[in-house]
Image 1 (tube, rainbow, N blue to C red):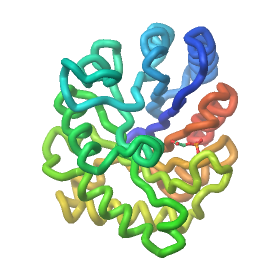
Image 2: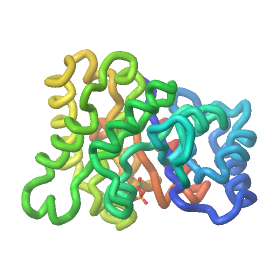
Image 3: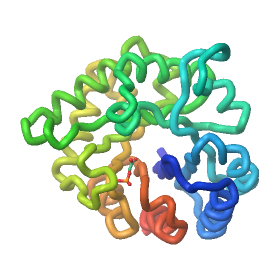
Length: 252
Ligand code: PGA
């Protein structure tokens, strides 16, 4: 299984021109890197230009969200088919910023996961606890609930496309990362839940990523030492040099 490094640009950069420049620099920086799957997830307005810029590079395109209906009167939403049409292979689903700032529920996450896989998009399901939940010793409960409800009635092909990102919310954009022990505990819990829901073979095939203040200096530890199957990178992915360093850390 190739490690997966996902750049989540969130609502950045401001212009299509900067997005194109960032893509170009990342593409040049990662030239010749094989055996690592790299995905750029720009905002919707830059998907098309980033796709064009990535042509022939091996780097793939992802979106940050989608809606579960195919087309119609859903103002402000975007469908899986539209994302496929613009050239996306991946889509981030259930990011904590969507859950907590925009009220996305586990039920919505579940619908989005089903829709993405049906359209052949590979979903990256984000789960993770808030600081309060962690302090109340509820991290494991939250991970379990988000995973079980997010994956309700999902099986077969959909599972083969899935990756899961464990992102403790207090580590996102804070410069604080979870301890290796905490990440390992979350990883084992996720694997245990997947084994219970499906089978150990299926659980082994689903990549489990870590996200939350990932940088060039800690990427090696999370992947090579802790054993995560990849990384979901926010802030640091907007700096081409830093992002390239993160990917290169996995080649050591
Ligand atoms: P961060 O964001 O790397 O800026 O902490 C990660 C994420 O939100 O996916």
